[in-house]
Length: 498
Ligand SMILES: Nc1ncnc2c1ncn2[C@@H]1O[C@H](COP(=O)(O)OP(=O)(O)O)[C@@H](O)[C@H]1O
Ligand SMILES: [Ca+2]
Image (tube, rainbow, N blue to C red; front, top):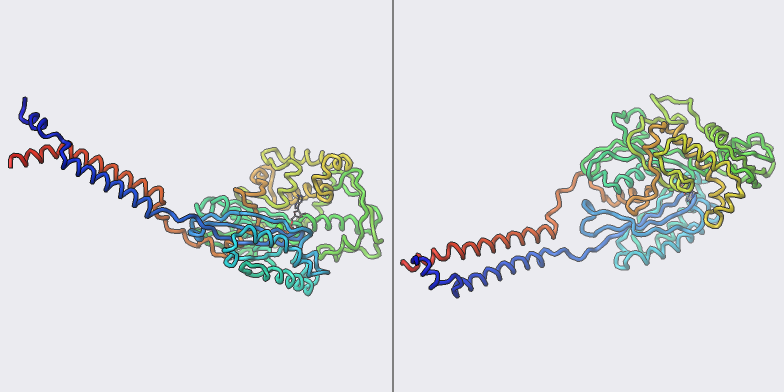
């Protein structure tokens, strides 16, 4: 039996000293991990809020956005928490009774007070942005537009939120902020990815916004918006066509068909069997058509449907001017447009209409889409009413054939989405739970929530920190055991020799 083995038997490794050292080591490691877990624990998540009212031509909607309080200007994600549809029409329809524009907002403001925690009310910014309906009212009757704003301001100032003002957005802002929203929600800005173009169709105006490589912004400076976001520069092309929202285009189409002041109009864009009396005064009441009003027209006409898609398309086409262009290239009405580029998201009325018509799938050939729409337009009005009334507003139902035809014509003839490019368009309502539209981009901009430069890389997250400390602690523990098992006997032997 060797001397070493004898010594081991006499002096096993679990001597009181080694046990004490092991216990102290274990306590130290547990303490280290506990401190790491407790000291660096994230504080319970708190949220901040922002509210934007979208005062559109047809209706007003309130959006509440929410984001983590700790990280608002770089890594945090802003999400839509809630939306509220204001009852009744858009604020521009209250020109004759402006106070009602203010009171119409009260219900949604109450809802917002319940949605945002009370202690956050005073710091929650509140914005109202009006679009083409108010642009038209301002052109038509600037004093009435001011009164509507006064009434709206009165309601908003009384709310507990941090009111930041109500104003009319320019067409460029409406287009550019829609583009920011779509690309922010898709996480394309932070990652510097290729961006998605934005197509917004409203009732009174429509916007197209996209980044086109090698596009010379100096050719039409009024169509360009430059951004520096997260360290990337963007030259955005954007244009807003006033009077090309679907409700104003319908007025233009009817104006086109009533130039001789008839008492009966046979309209290919409405369904067979459709017949409604309309008065000339309300058809021609907008600045988009007011100067076209035929002289000596009767007070009303009967609007009769014929259900003919290709004839409807001819009527719609005649509303665009494709000849006047002083630039290298134009979309229509003499407006500059660089070559289309990249994927596009089409939202708002583009989505509502194409979704109702079951035509959101753009992987089908354009010809198939047209054929399906032609079939739909030829469907008798009575049949459609039986199928959908009760679930769909009668006004919407009556107009889907016209709106669908307008959308296809605007995209293909107006903007030049050829049959190859048509599949670049995706009809979308929302992205990751937040509605596509200008409101989110508007708020991100006004609250400076998108930094111009890329944020510094974030510090180690809590879970990562705890894991690293735990791994180090386990390694230390293993080292300690190894030390005890292999080095300690030698140390003790040395002690013995001494
Ligand atoms: N469910 C729906 N079906 C069809 N059209 C709809 C639906 N919901 C909203 N719309 C239409 O979408 C358009 C929204 O435009 P809006 O934002 O009010 O105007 P603008 O942006 O021009 O100021 C209107 O034409 C409205 O009638
Ligand atoms: Ca709109």
